Image (cartoon, rainbow, N blue to C red; front, side, top):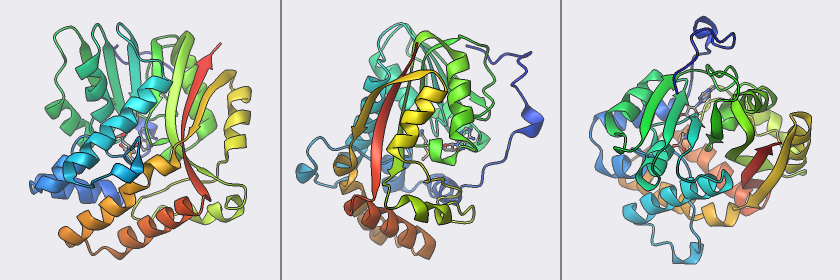
Length: 288
Ligand SMILES: C[S@@+](CC[C@H](N)C(=O)[O-])C[C@H]1O[C@@H](n2cnc3c(N)ncnc32)[C@H](O)[C@@H]1O
């Protein structure tokens, strides 16, 4: 799938720049050849999924497997199978594209990201299976540079909270999906109790950049209705992600990560998750 040259949604001159200090930090460590960081976040940059969290060993290999498992969960919600055109929005270093490329054939895989530095790494590390095609493009999730009805599945793994507007992204996903296509994503979802406090999380200067956590499960139900999707899957997998926090703490201690903002913000997210105030969901939507 090539970006549409004449699409009126393609607006390179107005593409917002990305300000995500955690990616600047990661890119520096990756450039320095940090082995543990390369194995943990050189492919996927998202939380892990443990089917049984009590068996988590928290080795680097255990975490790498858990990150593959999270991609697997989102792919299942998107009904990924052989022979599909798939768009992965906010694709990071191309981990989910690589995950699909390794397991399915006759795929046309497209990754989209705002950050050209991440795309460079994706292009350098992910090679198409002989029976697949894949490409990575720079662009904004809220102004997708692709024609209408061009994908079977749109994915957005752990990135929608960074997008300028969830509603606009859903409209764009709907536009580029073929009839009967699927949108699948993972997101942090606020409880009703936490919701009034989440305004303060939209802080563009934080380690994790601008994160809009002001969205509840009921908001997803309304968003689906407003944008003509049917909500098919809503899995609260918070418990399956909790070992990630212990892993991050250990990784930080081993590598002497002393950034206060990274330590404090991760602890806050862990605490809110353990108190069931912030939940991690996998969603699957269908374009009627
Ligand atoms: C937590 S990372 C997840 C990366 C990838 N999905 C993964 O699972 O490894 C969030 C990603 O969203 C991307 N992103 C943020 N805002 C975006 C936007 N408006 N359009 C496209 N990508 C965006 C960031 O550059 C980053 O790659």
